[in-house]
Image 1 (cartoon, rainbow, N blue to C red):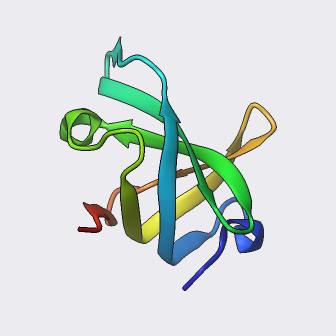
Image 2: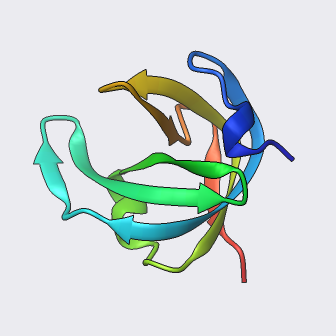
Image 3: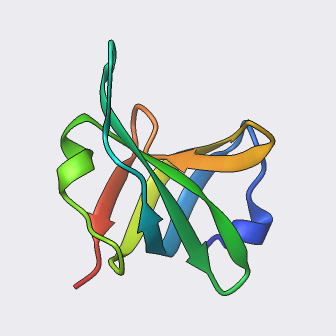
Length: 92
């Protein structure tokens, strides 16, 4: 399992487990709705971007698993998402 401190911008994320600490309001864009979340694990914090239908599926405090996601740098911060081929799921 990958940890936040091991993420490299421009590289895929095989498997990452994080907790959503806070969520910004949903924004409407020409590419669909998006919502930025602050997530963390025991090694650090980064920003998670939720897109389209993902926006309403998660809440603060949820523990989520990102499989085959993507990492990039945005505004000098590490940003992660499910990318085009990845998936995000809530851990029960």
